[in-house]
Image (cartoon, rainbow, N blue to C red; front, side, top):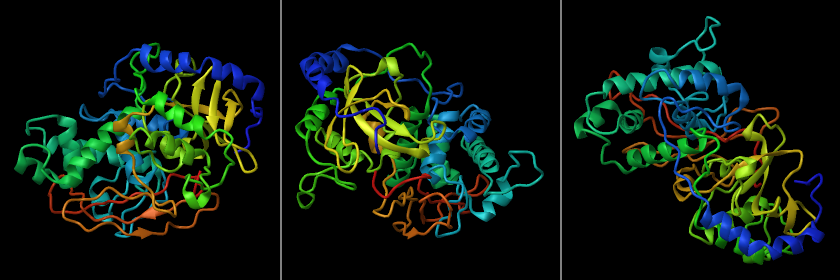
Length: 398
């Protein structure tokens, strides 16, 4: 990415460095706040889903008490990366990754055009909510957290949830429930926008790592490996910085966007990730990330021909920020080297195998095959759909 107005910020570097310790200490340890509460009333945080999907997810995410817009958004993101063309190797289709047999029972005409089309994202959003709520009714008498039981039924089937009287003891299902609930926090709008977002205790050390790389030449696709002469691209630098404090981020910038809650511009603290996108209404177009250090500046690896440096964040394509959390980062889907999202696994099934996506004119999307482990609400044995796809406009490395 070429920052339009960033420059090297050489004149400002002294100011940033002089106040660095105070900024990090204040930002990391003095702010207070509590994690956002989830619930049916929770809305979506701006910029976390493509604008065309925000209204429908807000609407259908309140279809039943056990569902919420952030929870529905987190499911769609994990299943397809918001790619309406996603197709798995076992035949799951569209944004919500329905198998045809299950679509026949739960497909919903979300846009009132007289058709139920799994490839239509508005129909897919409505159908995912319809299916979730049917599963919630099936396991309503099972003790425990109702959202967790609903998600477990989505992954392992309502029969398994009823048998074990809660989330089954399957590693895949327990991981699926944990990951969806954690990712939902990144999609949730704060109940009180003026309240501070909880800070990260690892931020200071992540910034320190990035500081040690100042002056290092940029390398597209760089992860800092010895054979790359220790060079980085933008998301390679942020990933390595947080890996140095034990937090593993996804490789590409627009997946890192979902690694935690999203503080507003006036709530930024040192250590927040800051992002840029070509379309400010669509997070799939995020193409650049840096680490905020305070005073309106970040450390970033800007573009080919430049070095890791300080730059201003207040430029044209700034879309927002993420405060990284360990749970949020751990919950995010991984990608293969070709950019394919690795699908959520289902109990008792083999590891998924990557499958190419249908051609798309302006996207570098890929899809991921996954085992057919999603049962219908009527019978736990009926497989419905699994698998995910790359999230829209992604370079192989960002």
